[in-house]
Length: 133
Image (cartoon, helix red, strand yellow):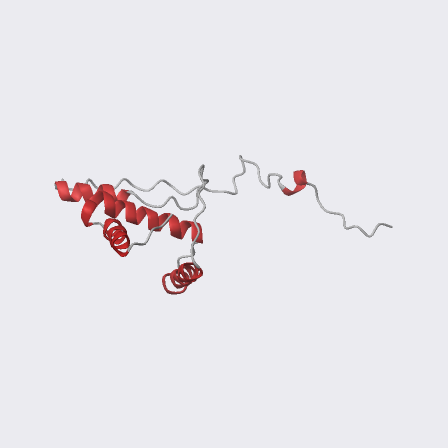
C-alpha cells in the first residue's frame, strides 16, 4: 500500500459545476433607466469627467509595474486597508488601494492642473532636494 495521498487531477478541480442551461440560477432584472439629468455647466462637466476616472477594481489587468515602498509606507497602507474594512466595511487588497489612489491623483491633476495635490507635492519635494526614482 502506498503512503502517497491520492489527489484529484486538474480536470476534476476545474470542471464545470453547473450547466449554462440550468434554471437554478436566476439573473436579476435589468435596472430601470435613470431619469435624464439636467444640463451641466462647463465646471460640472469637467468634474464629472474627473469623477469618471476611477480605479479598475477587481478585473484582469494586462500591465504590471513594481513599486518599492518603505516599511513605514507599507505599514500606513496596511493600516488604511484595515481601517477601510473595520470602519467602512470595504474589503480591498493593496493593489486596489494603490489603483484607487492613482486614479484620484490623476483625476485631481486633470481637473486642477498646477493647483493639484500631485503637482504641489512634487514641487515641494524638488525644493527640498529629494528625488524619487
